[in-house]
Length: 236
Image 1 (cartoon, helix red, strand yellow):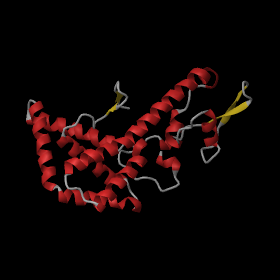
Image 2 (image 1 turned 30 degrees about the vertical axis):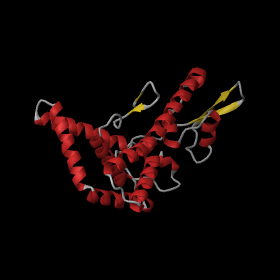
Image 3 (image 1 turned 180 degrees about the vertical axis):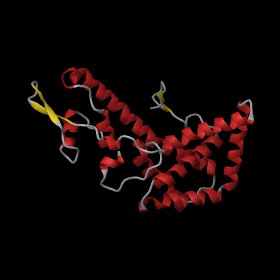
């Protein structure tokens, strides 16, 4: 999770960029979308990405050189500059490949791609600035939802942790957040894994289900296709 600034905005790898950095980060995000957003419905992302690279090859080459120059100015040696830029771009690519935001990011990238095919941009830097902001919105949505989940999880632990044990973040990360305890319990009965037991709540008379976190769904690679429609458990 990135740091949240005093104004409420998230400080990410795309915060406070120059024009050349904005263009290059946007190109990087588009590249990740072309790799990660699989399925026939996302084909325009790859098509439009290739067209963008070809149409603005000179501008992209210029931005790449400017970024190299910037890293050289901040490093003691050429080797240090290369390593610093490689580390930075690894952060950028991993950011755009974040599994939790992938579905919304892919849908956003598809919208941007379709618009670029319908009306090819005239200025790559202007297009990159507006489109990168739209990419960022997908991740801000995820960060906001996860922060809300952490708050709700903390409230559960403070109120019920001593009686039932800590909340189960692994389940929620895989199968989706419930807005309250009832929502989580209901999700268990709608296609989720079978409970391995239950705990009686004397205050409400409710049997609270207890589940094991599926061990084969926790770890995911950086680059992974989007699951087929309807496979909600795999998409989260």
